[in-house]
Length: 245
Length: 223
Image (cartoon, rainbow over all chains, first blue to last red; front, side, top):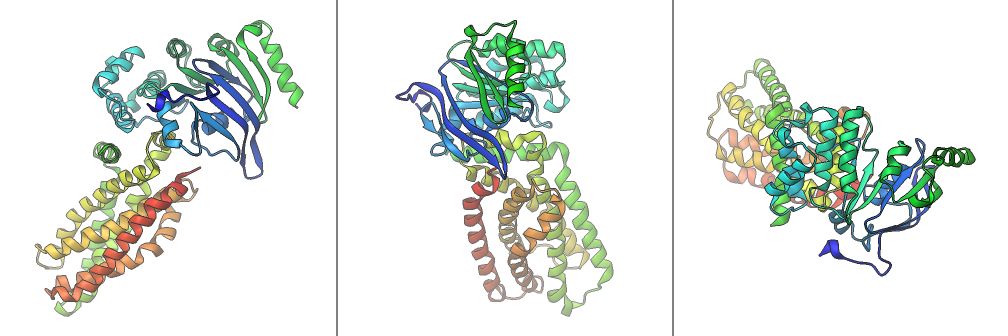
């Protein structure tokens, strides 16, 4: 029922005047975002732009210093547990326990999310990310690419309607990166809303329905994918970042 | 029921990890046994000194060994940012606290089950002492309840290994003193009435620490 909660505005994610400070450092400065259901928003930006902080605030890991965020209509400050039922986060950190097998890791997270028919669901997601043959290997013994696939399986295990991906390709070799890209393309189909951060402009554009460039905690560019020319996006990106300096 | 299952899931995950690595049990056990052996050589206790000195030896071994174990409670979650995976789960922070507490308590209990008979044997005391078991269970409840909170509090500090005992021991001292005082009469076969007040103190601290820790845990783990 939680996942079906709708809003008057109909946005999957709605952030208004979002600010986040760490002491004197202002990591996010008045971010406004409205993301539709099923949309894939790709967030670009240089290191320190606030991409990871943005995802952490949206996913309830950090509390905003000011402003508001609603996820599927739920305010993240007032209903964090309900919000967490609707979302998931996968990033360059896999959140897997090295000394547990992939199956045990998925079983643990599945129980925490109260996933029904857990064993069957684990088999489904394992097959989908092509990790089934390694399901009973310890997570710490897997290659980085395999771990990342297991991490994606963990993230989608409870079938979240919103998925946050924080640079999911970091540290992967080209082959592992290609497999993860395939998996991410599959995630992007259907009604799931995806917010992804990446430094890889070409790959990000392939997946995106809309694009945001962050710089020093501000949105400096926001456009739908159709309005962006793939060839000159690098120039647009460079111009936005240069203009901020 | 669902909340209990989630607490159990955290507990079982910690058990499984420890069973595979034996990081906590081995290090704490070695430390506690060393303490007992050193004290058994340092003191040759007569019947008069048993009540005053022996309880202190047992509780020094369990307390300082326990601190080593508590240091690892949240260190496991810190590695690979697993704590974020745990915090993303749709459960209240209190569920995480109770799951971790159950793990810490069980580790401590396993250590006590091994160390206590060795302690009793080394000091020529009767090995079957059900009242001592009761004291240990109650004191370790208080120890683990406040220890789990401080373990979460210090996990992000740079000098975690030093900070935990500095912050934690002053809080747990009332429980340890009461446990030492309650253990004395048990070792010499004294009556229940001699230890009753101390048991009540331990139970009172258990209730205070369990309640306060599960309430403030949310603030400790946020950011």
